[in-house]
Length: 315
Image 1 (cartoon, rainbow, N blue to C red):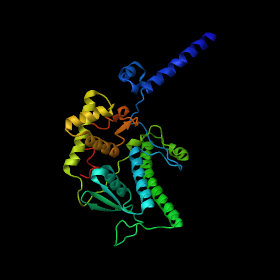
Image 2 (cartoon, rainbow, N blue to C red):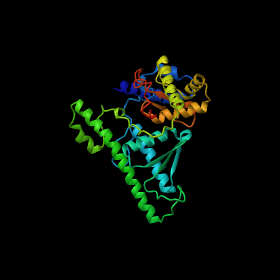
Image 3 (cartoon, rainbow, N blue to C red):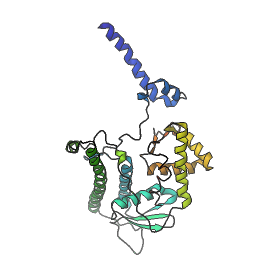
Image 4 (cartoon, rainbow, N blue to C red):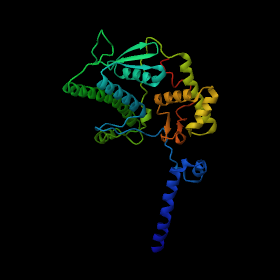
């Protein structure tokens, strides 16, 4: 027995050291060598197809990332109105993904905002905003009591949107329980606000944006984003990997499309914001050299990778 304890005491520090070395291995240039030598279970990369969601406060169910991003944008717009009480203007140059996400929000709730199409984007008007002939961006000074009441109304609007998103997930979850013959789990899960372990949040339907009467996205801009996604998928397929260093893929894209890095980075950010369940940045550290771009190659097959963004780009 003493011999066994002696062996255990000597093995345990070695295991801890392996884990520590792996998670800090990005700081040197021997990452690939370390990963090959160690057990794959220690590799600190997450599968995009696994259930990832954020447990929100207030007793809500977790949401897939594509729904979380919509809720976050709604929250930003509402808080901006609470502070400034004026219209918001989104331009294609600076707010490419936000414009599409607003159109997705209007699909969920057509009365959420009023929008006006302008030459280079859209103008968003909050339903609480008072129309004025003198100025579209007039700021109304309110008392502290009025602001408190407005804050409660805005929180209620955000909560209603959250409930709509929850409903989308719960419908899909209920279908999944029916397929695996586990309908009894629904009552249990509702007590703890959890979903079945086999349920993939990413399988929840995408929220399609509403169609604009006037097209604001040029064909060249749409094609550029589609071509970038297609090229990345093909490049990852050829290398047989699902993730690459951020700087590396930016350089490759810049050379292939003959564009400056800033333009490539902006387009890549747009794609990530629109389809976060298929592509994301891992290890979002202050140092970009430590970032990893992960692509879910399984969900971007040959059949759909050429049209995955079409529904979001209002084609």
